Image 1 (cartoon, rainbow, N blue to C red):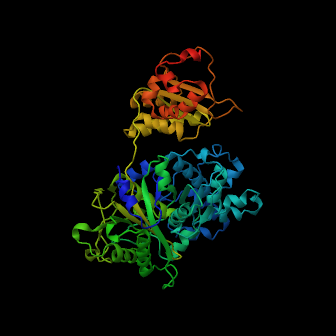
Image 2 (cartoon, helix red, strand yellow):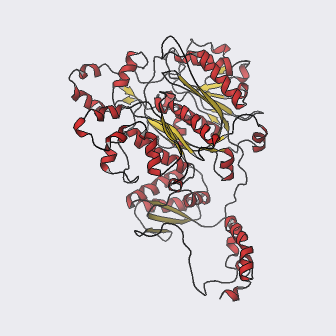
Image 3 (cartoon, helix red, strand yellow):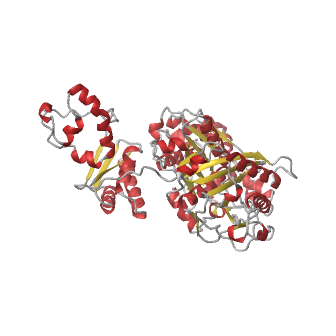
Length: 601
């Protein structure tokens, strides 16, 4: 997972400025709440189709007695979140009444954006006042329609709480982000269009950091009824992408957000880079048999234009993340267009692999494109291609033998060839908007920091003791599931997380010691290696100078720090000249050998 040599990327001067994907947040059905969970969910070929929660449609039964007969006919199966109503309003400083009238899509966008920033190692609170952009793909406004029908219940909070613009604007407002903030409705293409537009804004210099993604919450039955009438939904709620049994798509809910930054800036700042956006394009189907009918020729034209503008040879694409909803017309049309551009000239040994995330998570509509992009980013990062879940028999509506494409049905390693690993992601809206994004593996990590040996202090904080315990439990579980060194974990928590008022620190030298300390914290226990405390109200939150007085130094007191901690040594070297000019001796010498300590006393 070291990626490719940056020199190779620098030599490719053609194409737009590359954009780094540095963080991911996601939430989908099946209790998937983070990128690690999502990756395992994909590798295992899982899905989570259930019946619509009973309480979702109850308001519609009360509204009109005729609705009961209609609802018995509406497709009830799909991929639904277990706790759509759950929201930690207090954490974000939102009043109970304001939270009550907030569309769950606004709540999800806010929570998943925060999680994406933390995954990127960016403290959300540190972005206050910055030009950070927020672009969110949206489609459904079920909640707003439902709430606005209750005329006596409408108050001042109802408008923004139920508006689609609030899905992006709420994030910008509560995090004090002052860059572009836009909710985009391009139906099922919306979130990939949001990613593409965010990349364009970064390249234009409108913003230095962007959150881009989309959300979907299936509150009411109205749109499902529309799709049923159009013959677009699968009775069993499952997307059977590329399968002979494909009979429509299963609706899904969830959210996905990626954190984007100019590649050069991400490398300068030492960010972890998961993948790189090389370019993309958006377009329209134009006039077709019906507005919801796909146009393969328009799709192929867009693919070619995206590759041409990005300086990418279609033959170098190793994986295609298709829109792939599982409709009898849409899938064959899309595959034929992809084969025309990306499968041309390929033999049996170099077929381009193609898949879709929708059999795993359903069709998230407003959030569909970004979830396909997140899957593909993770595939590049892990150098592995997950299977297309549930595939039994390939549809014969596609000429697979001559397509130059193939569908993986098991987990496959993604071997590097003489070109970097590259992929393409597709997303299409039922109004005709189509979007395409080209991805590339991350550059090799440069100047890797050597972490010092010895005990480290690992900080953890929250807004309350209960939340602190949950944070400790979650971090312990995360460490148990992986093999991370604890020094970089400590560094990330110190420098790249928001520090809340209820705090704890665990002192540990090894991973098992840190896990034990976190488990103790989660249980409310104390110990010699565990320190807890709370920031007094009204006190300064930032670091301050410590004036220690006389007699608190000794010869060689900084020698170990200068040797083991490169950042400390660098800062001392930076101030040493000023120190010498003002005080007449070397700070480095005083700390490492004890020279001039007599003058300090």
